[in-house]
Amino acid sequence: MIQEYLNSVDNFIVVGDRVLIKPRDMETHTRSGLVLPASVKEKEEIQSGYIIKTGPGYPIPNNDIEETWKGNEDTKYIGMQASAGDLAIFLKSRAHEIEFENEKYLIVPHSAILLLIRDEQ
Image (tube, rainbow, N blue to C red; front, side, top):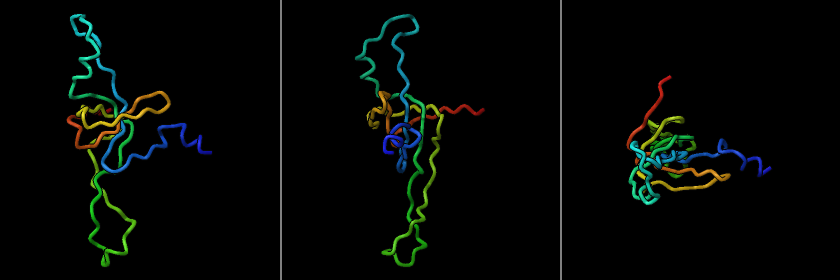
């Protein structure tokens, strides 16, 4: 039964203000045909990739509770601009790499995303 849960990225639950990104491979050649060495990729400060899943957003406190010690399960969130399918340009230094079924994914906080490119079809 556990194996069924581990077989798909669809079962991942992204927490808080984070997004799950499938990194896009960087170009290995310039437009003029020069081959770029691997060290050039490592020095890049920004990276791009497609957003697979997003978390619920930034949690905000609920001031409707009269007695704060009781707690409340109705957590409210401020939504994020990023959504699944967007191409994200983000700061590489803030990304955390994971590997699942021989595929690399990145967990990136929403605040590290610099630009979103969305196909409005």
